[in-house]
Image (cartoon, rainbow, N blue to C red; front, side, top):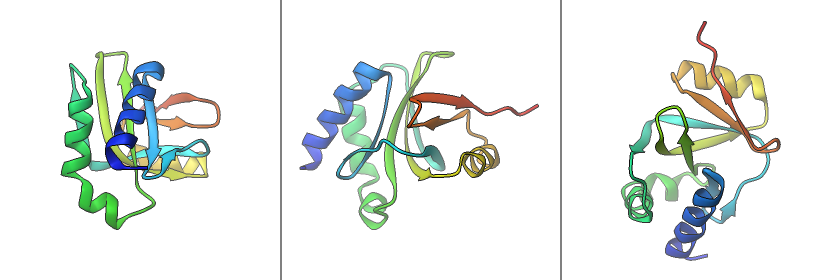
Length: 121
């Protein structure tokens, strides 16, 4: 799939589902997604152009790391869309620990299609 086609599919998926996780070849469906620190952007008014810019800005790291994914997430607490590079882990506990260490808000459980907020108490 060409990059612009992938971006369009991902954007459409995000708009219909309030989030998305795509590999460089398509959607990801199994595991726990954890955003990588330093590779996130936040948007109040999210558009496809934001996603295009994100892919362009991060094209080298995405090209060099085939196990990195681009995820989008609507945080309903502040009505902002987070776009970031993420990794997929099979183990929930490992994903939660990494997210906590990275001071993330949540991870995403792809199988159950739900966010899991990080408890910092």
